Image 1 (cartoon, protein in one colour):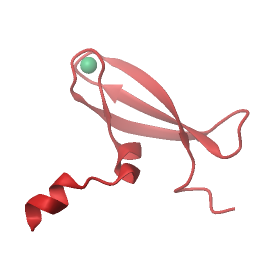
Image 2: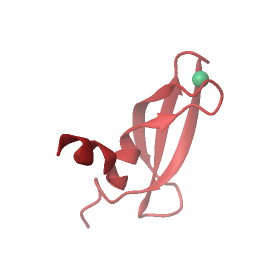
Image 3: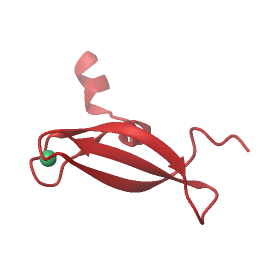
Image 4: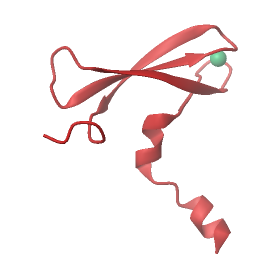
Length: 67
Ligand SMILES: [Zn+2]
């Protein structure tokens, strides 16, 4: 039963983790800021400590924005 739960990973968890395209390490979610143009989107900043670089992903702001 527990194996089935692990296999079914909801898409919503993807907003809190990202994989580094270079070293494939799990990048740390450091910041969420509003999208400058699109209201229902948010800029999610992730950092990889192995490569010492940040990446920003535009994701739907379904969690924070309740309007
Ligand atoms: Zn990396």
